[in-house]
Length: 212
Ligand SMILES: [Zn+2]
Ligand SMILES: [Zn+2]
Image (cartoon, rainbow, N blue to C red; front, top):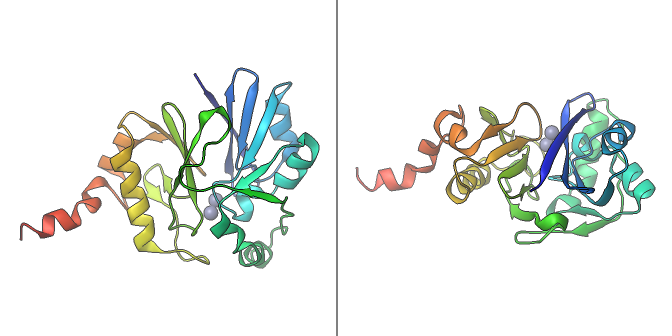
């Protein structure tokens, strides 16, 4: 049974998650405040640092952590290719340009440590991924409680975001917990019904059109 802990970090209040099986952990989205993350970690061992996507508010402490812990940094290649554009965004918004570690690329179907699985869920960024555990999914900025990620930043695509959110609804059980990149957790069933931007109803457009 995996445990999930959240450390809220940085000026954009990013959820950094520690997913652990006993004393072995994976750090997901270390946006900032490496020290706070390490304090929460305590004596447990880290196997990898994973980014749901490469926006600065999700990777600001990645280099510091992978350097000090000696573990790989895992990210989707399509976001790595946009890293300069993403880092420019940080500077334009008045934040520090993140220093990034050398990546190991992961994609749909990649198996992460602790038997976590990768779903490629593009739209917020081309390389956005969701990380699936035994009864939860970590969705980054793809899907939030009541909302979805913005698509007006470099590489964003509203149609692909809708397809990705609909895929999460279709492929994951209703009682799966959604741990998003910002804000409170929710469940797949709750968002299917009550998400204000893309509820399940918005995924049925094609099917409905056939009946008209
Ligand atoms: Zn983002
Ligand atoms: Zn974010």
